[in-house]
Image (cartoon, rainbow, N blue to C red; front, top):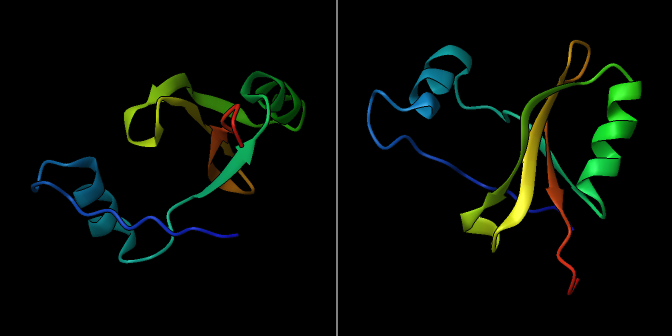
Length: 86
């Protein structure tokens, strides 16, 4: 089931503010939930995705690991590791 996350800048120095100034109000990236984030990274690197941010716990998502990857033909994607209780 798709979920939508709406973000708003805290102030004019926020990275979100710069993205909105540059891109306008538009979808910025897609997040994919994966069973094993390290395996997903490995598989996407084979498809020429670049790892932009190594996996880190996301406080807002119950400390599930997230990372960002980029592909020149696709753009930015986010990976979210599925919780063990899902």
